[in-house]
Image (tube, rainbow, N blue to C red):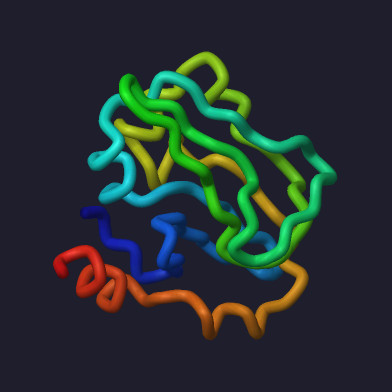
Length: 126
């Protein structure tokens, strides 16, 4: 797994990298490896607002579909349109080109509900 010290993780296997009040959101290496090859990504529209832990989209793999859960409350400011043509970027580079949405974070105090990399690793190793 890539060094992700600047990233927070949700219990629902999404991650968020925070710069000022902007968060970049994607799914974890563990989640994409469990799903297998991603063949389609359903993303929200710019301007959509989501609460923490609310479903904001889905990913479709060869044999299953999985919901995506928003790690923090916020408004979508950008979507990764590259995923529409190349959904396997989620598998190949989940923390780089495989990001899904950017949000303007509404409540930074919600960070206390997320996991550090070490805590997330402990969770997935169980």
